Image (cartoon, rainbow, N blue to C red; front, side, top):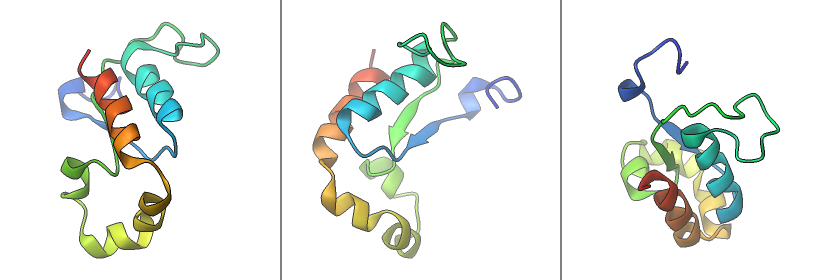
Amino acid sequence: MAEQYPRDELIVVLGTPTADATRLYAMTVTDGDPAWAGALSGVALGLPVYHVTEPAVKAEIPPAVYDEHVALMEMVIDVGEIATAVASVRER
């Protein structure tokens, strides 16, 4: 999709369960695969990345949909730590 559409029209929304996984995937879609093991090795897409539990994303999802698909996960993960991880990649 990053090749089909202008990058300023795309964002990546993650639903990862840990800060470490979030940081890794966020780095992959911005700077390229940091492990140099996947299809995005050395491919810097430069896409903005967010986590589904971040307030800005959550506000865009109808509450009933969020409750059905995300709310349970939100109760068992460290939302603050994940938000910090994705923000640190996004703000570089």
